[in-house]
Length: 485
Image (cartoon, rainbow, N blue to C red; front, side, top):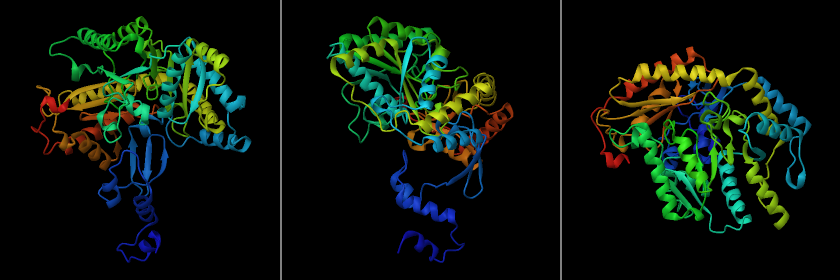
């Protein structure tokens, strides 16, 4: 007997609803990303079937409403339920639902989107855009472009790539290796040998006791220099960095960090790949993370906010410097054999164009700067004095609370307690979606850019209730500093 028939005839009390049946089918047949496989299959992980959404709120099959204070996964910048997006997607589907972009074939939306990304949304010196479907595949493309670039230049030894501890750049083979979190390596034989990691820019967690921000920046630069000296600059091809570290804990860089790090990369002729997958399209209260911090990348990865998650689309933005070498390679070796079936998908590109129209027309970049500043102000006001909150940080519509068992001594909770997950679960039960992040106990916020100050007040109020509810059994229970690292 099929699963659905079994459920309908099981005589359960109360009777199984259509949503219950769908969730039971989900447990049997759908493999979820980043989810405990056994606990989900046996029902220990609560399932939620999300059915409707509008603005910053999303509803499940049981009619429960949630404020999505994480914008999906940093994605839904313009908010949910935009009719304008639905109309643009439908219109393009009727006109041209799909054709590939291999061998010079193209389509109007992909061409116009490329123009706008280069002319309106990129720092000076960028030239071309290559499309994919996700941030992970964008960064996989970046790795291949970096290696191709050095092969064309005859630098066969210059292939190693540096990322940072606790960074997140994807969950593929190369991108999972770049990601500086052990949980993405365990069980997969990662990281790959060409991938190296240097210090995280996490001043709160990693600075020497008593060190100033400038001294910590000098320490980060020294670690990078030591790594380059040990490996040999002639073997290092590129450095990957998120302008603000996202899923590693929402870590804004200390003042002076990016100018100092970029100087090292330029001195050693190491390409700089700016991973803007989280930071792009207004999230920081600037058009991009590169604009916010004055970055001068050779390559840029974008996704998420490019379509606000309405359809999957990513982009690799290539500088004039790199493009000149790619053109040289084509003259010498023929076409570069890299591509994805859905590169430059016309419907996804049409969605991106409409998304950018909304961001620009509603001035969501400046709105994010204003409301994001208010979010950080309210989090400081509510949590700076909380005994279990060690650090409050953020920039634009990105913010985080780092939990500590003893904030004075900076002693973290024992990992088995899953302190940040307890807070996130308590928030969910109260109608708020936040996210437990990174390798430490961090509660992350990334509301849609359309959120208002009134929305922020509600988000912070529920977060405080959730932390209070989750605090039972946590106070005074901590790990050693060694365990935390």
